[in-house]
Length: 335
Ligand code: FNR
Image (cartoon, rainbow, N blue to C red):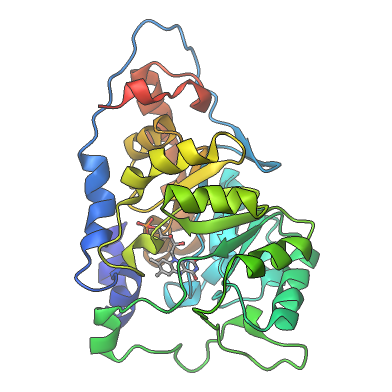
């Protein structure tokens, strides 16, 4: 899918989707962390057919894999976010809609997919409440608040390419205010935990914090009422040099202490990667670039094919490792 996407995409768009911050050390580290792990399988456990179904924060899913929030799907393929959502519905996968989506959340929801909604914490809290209300009304079942972006990462490919904004004819459709004007997504290094606490008060939806790497922040997140945590370094697009997410996962899982679900993203490419992340304590994982590659390569159908392939791969890997359910995956299965 990645090679098909590379062939299909304009090079500037390819760089936007593929690239990371700085020297892309963290981008590479995320994938390498999975390459360093090996599975220690169990045998003769009589698992029979596997059951990959999972429920996270009340949302049921066919497998413990969600679609990570990523910007600008219409730059990958005309099917856009609605195409990705259609694939999610067909495969029983949850899609996290990005605040930087190029289609309105209502149109994406009209596909019938199970959606969560991602937002960057906005200093204009009245506007933030407006966006949250819109996501709630569209039927989104959780809010994913991205906390790793006090400022935008330095993405050198984009700087070299002069890619600073969406081309004409595209807009961040969920950044429209009540008058229909499109606001830009604000990143504000002044925001702190009090902002999250007020956001928590303003909605009945579960609030998941995305972009936690330090165990002490996992504890803070729980203390401030977060309902879930996503261990993420934004796919290596924010702080270059940040720890690989798989390496950060066990510390966050320990700090969360089972009080809230812990998810992880970054560098997962195969069923074996999913198995390793679940074994090291994740309740579910999210995929970013694999979805974009599949979308660029084949629109909604491409994303469906990718998710089905991953599901088959995970099922097969679990059979070979002697696990029937995700809950059977424990840290002793990973070397
Ligand atoms: C992202 N990511 C992201 N995250 C977020 O919270 N809001 C967003 O709008 C975006 N946009 C975005 C665009 C592109 C092109 C990429 C590649 C990533 C980060 C994303 O949710 C996720 O953390 C990573 O993509 C996971 O890493 P992998 O799977 O891409 O390795």
